[in-house]
Image (cartoon, rainbow, N blue to C red; front, top):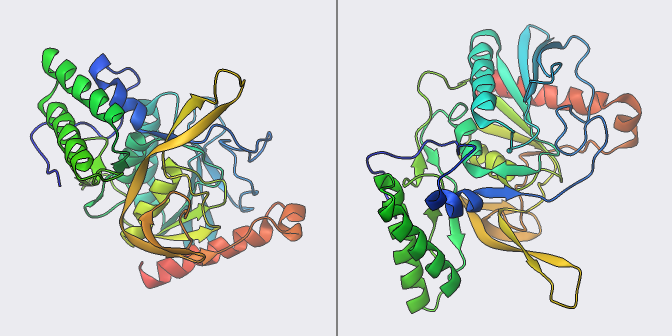
Length: 338
């Protein structure tokens, strides 16, 4: 496997990238095309599908410049932080990350635990997702690593990108990463293997070290549903695999890879999407109805605590029962110091 070298890339992809970075930037996108939407609590909406607790104090979410909805509420003697992450494709990653870090610092100082809502989050940039995780994980964690389909097409793409990176004096980490891609693809093709080994997509390192001073270090609950997709699934899986958070909700969608769109043929107006890469979890995870697997694709992320929002009672009351149950989950985590 690849190891960290001098000059690793920043975890968050920039809004504009040089030409030799384009293929890497495109491959880092793991998102759904569309999903269910409405004015409140829709797919990618800043608002959750449920009403906040009655004593909820807003911090973010009421201004057009806010990338998150966040705040705090009291439950007994405990103060609970809450933040909704609606998408992994914010219009400005630097501003979004600044807001997120500010909230983590506040929550670390002023709350006993944190609830993160990624329900109906359709995914986006894996590198932006890695950056968010740097402020939540408390130890080294597995980066966004891919199995890539071993084809002559990808060998040609990465060989060309490697030469372009060398010609334009790209950073050393990127040249080394493209070289690793080319080498692994060549070996996979020689061995008649369908996929490469696990390769990082956001830097040359297979692991990421979190922020020692800015990370939130108290108990976390992550809320998921069947419309939690792609990069948002990687986010949930990463926190579950390290034991950093309790996942509460429904099994996620199972879209763990980078999809490419292709024409269905010259006699058709349709197109098809094919998963070209597969996000690899740090360890195999059991999911009822599926073999134990280290892939998110198809299997999704199975929650530690099953909880369904889609009940008549929740729909009638704005999710009162749903909120009460995930509040109990974070209180239990706080009591265990977990």
